[in-house]
Structure formats: structure tokens, C-alpha cells
Image (cartoon, rainbow, N blue to C red; front, side):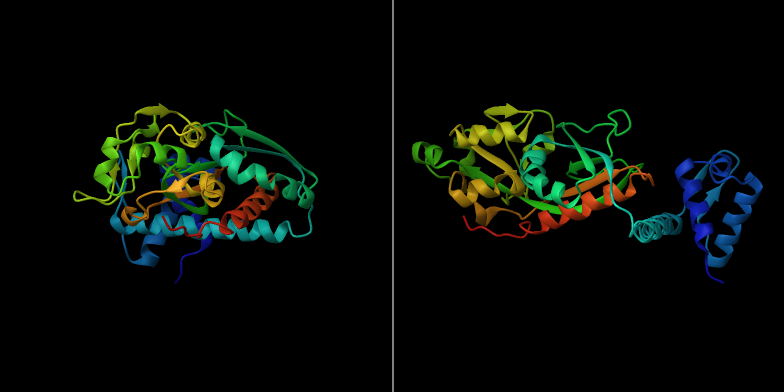
Length: 303
């Protein structure tokens, strides 16, 4: 006998709520009914998913794997239902989007005119914040996050990934010379971030690994500030492809140490809360911006 979707929903709800009683209230059942559903699911699968005691519940290894797969299946079912129910509707209403300033300026703003022509009934509200925000507190429908995700309470959709480049302006290189090895970076002015230490680990291979920790000569909280500092010849910087692609193409910034680059790519995700009233607006924007990012994400430059 195969597991049913309602059983998957109950199982996922128990894990996300942290207890059978809380999940029972969430799904509108009695705790004993929820407990029977879990037992029936384990019997069908012939494996223990949760080690339950009077005080706590712990997922088994099989339970952890099943939880991840069940969530993925339920998300796909939700998305399918939303797409089918909204096929004949016109997306409309306010859509609040939050992203770090560099992503907003370089990967969203250039395409707003086209998006508005496609979806004239959606009213956009664009907000920039270089720190992770609370979507509810900021009344945000979609937040774009660069880097690994840590908040499992949100729905997430991958928009792709962006390589990191080591860059400097021609004026800086003419004045200070071009580094030909990772070790030579120690003799240069390096531009780095103030708040996220991991962003100061550059994707460069060396004898001790493939991440090179720098000590910035100048630090800034925003990647856009660092980009402008690099353009002004203030030093060498490590920035994402999406915000420097035009600078590289026009020669305003030059690629450095491409042969030592480990090839690490920053994940780009859209996070949001599931809300049927906003689902169509959210879906339209995510489909649109993902297509734009795919258009240049795999471009390769030679240093």
C-alpha cells in the first residue's frame, strides 16, 4: 500500500510544528488521529520515521530523508495546483520585493520596464536592504538572497547562481602592477566587506585550499560601494558576476587570477511565504527574473 498525500502532509506538519498536539491543531484533527496517521505511514513504509517518547520526538536517518522528499513533493503539488488554477487569471495587485542593493540595481531594475509592459496590473514596490530581513515585519512578498540559505521556515526557489570574480580597474593595475599569483595579493590594496566575514574568503586556489582569506585595506557594508571603490582605482575586489558583467565587457574592470579561481558560484534564491492571494504575482515575477538571470549566468570571460 502506498503513502497518500494527506499522510505526507500530516507527517511534515508534525515535524514543522514540533509536536503531535500542535500539528493536530494545525490540521484540524485530534492528537490521537495524527498519531494513528504517523503509525500507519511507518507501517506502509516498513520503517521508523520518528523516535517518539513522552517528552520529545527525534527523526531517524530514514525520517530525515523522507521529510526532505515529502516537503519537495508537497511543494510541487502546491505549485501545480496554483499554476492550473491561475491559468485564466490576470496577475494584479501590489508586489513587494526586497533585495540587496547590488542585485536590485543590476539584476532587477534594468528589466522593470519589460516586466511592467508584460504585467501592467501589478504594482511594484522595490526595497533594498543589504542585511537579511524579516519578511513579515517588512511586509515583503519576495526577498532575493545571495548565498546559502539558513531559514527553513520560508519557501525558497532557486534563481540560479553567480560566479565570483577578482577584479581591478585598469588605472589601479597601471599604477600598482598586476598580481600574477595569489600570494602577490598581500602586496596590494584589497577591498572587502565589513559585516559578513565569509565574503572576505575569496575563491582562489592556493597550497592550503581553495579559499583565500583577505585583510581588507578598505571595508564597506555594500557590494555596490566596493564596486565603485574598485572603479575609482582604490584596490582589488571580489564581486559577483551579475553586478560586474557590464564593467568587464566594457573594460572598466579587469579580471585577475582567473587561472587560480576555484569556480565557486554564489547561489541566488527567492524566499517567500506561501499565500494564495499573492501566488500568481509571485510566480510571474519569479519566472520572469529567472529567465533574465539565465540569459547571462553561464557567460565565461578569460582573464
